[in-house]
Length: 93
Image 1 (cartoon, rainbow, N blue to C red):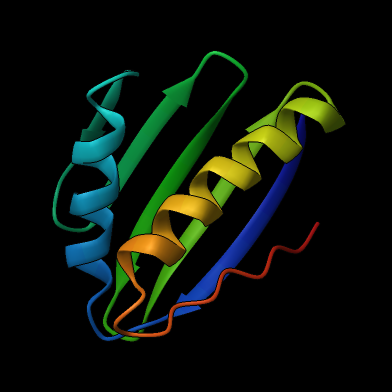
Image 2: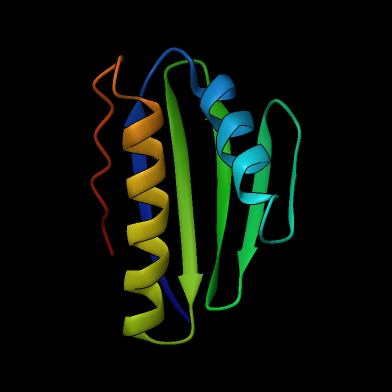
């Protein structure tokens, strides 16, 4: 499995975690609390962890194409939801 992580600075991490997971749950299996969440796509998974100063994201997928797809979906949604807070997702290997 390939992995990638991101730390998105925000003081509203829990809010964004819940919003993302609720949104993803419309189409894929997702579960969450105020502190932790997961979304399981057909091509990979995303684990979310809310801390007071940041939302931590960890994704994994079986190949680079699938990992890119998870990265894109999570980044696109979080940056759109966080437009007001100027959220930016930067991934590292």
